[in-house]
Image 1 (cartoon, rainbow, N blue to C red):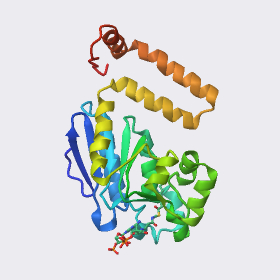
Image 2: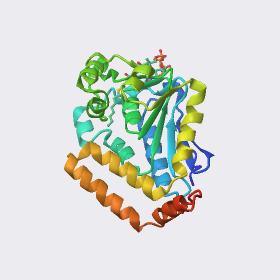
Image 3: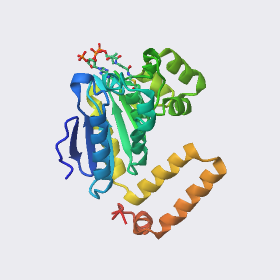
Image 4: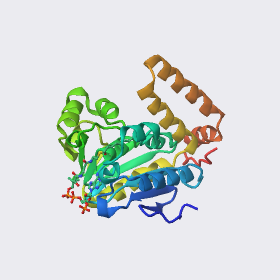
Length: 261
Ligand code: CO8
């Protein structure tokens, strides 16, 4: 049941087929502690298997998307503990979620919060958003992909500047550098993110999943392998009912009625 009571998340379906997950730990600016990340993992797994949901919007509060991993929880951890438990490795599971994940950031997206935002597929931001990797101020470095994903998004010089100085980047700059797809006013953030979600949800679930898989492969594979992977997925889609429906609808000048099959 998706309405499981979570202590650090609110889960809702405000628009048909689009699930809204709101990080809700206001006392710590949505700092990502173990409990919260466990709940996020749980809800994403359930959503993965819920055929009614085709797309997810992940947001925080107006003041903070998330101010990073929970520093109070991390402070006393030892190297051996971190190493033996492979500390925070479970965060990678966000990348295993196969439906489109839209991030909607207002306020602070820092450290692990920024890394979670960068792990979403489409990132929208309100004009108040501030992105940063302040780990250097704590005597550590980013550990959730910050040094790897940020450089791909904004290039080496800017990524180095942010990671070495801890300086934050504002919404407009994040937009100009292609990190976020849109900057909107605070009150427009959720409506706009849900609108994007609704538009995606009107397509075939099979082609949505294939499109996400193919785009993400571009980050992992050399070009020749990426092109081959894309073509294989492209060919496979001709085995779906939705391909026949989509093309028939075009020719018959009507709206496609996808069955996600
Ligand atoms: N962890 C724990 N508590 C936090 C965190 C945090 N990251 N951020 C804020 N809080 C708490 C504060 O301690 C405070 O609690 P209390 O009222 O009990 O003192 C409450 O939230 C409100 O915060 P502030 O009073 O500081 O609010 P301000 O508006 O003054 O400042 C800031 C907002 C600038 C966002 C400030 O809170 C801040 O600098 N926070 C820390 C940001 C940071 O350093 N983040 C990086 C953390 S390290 C990390 O994320 C490593 C990720 C590794 C991921 C690995 C994945 C595999």
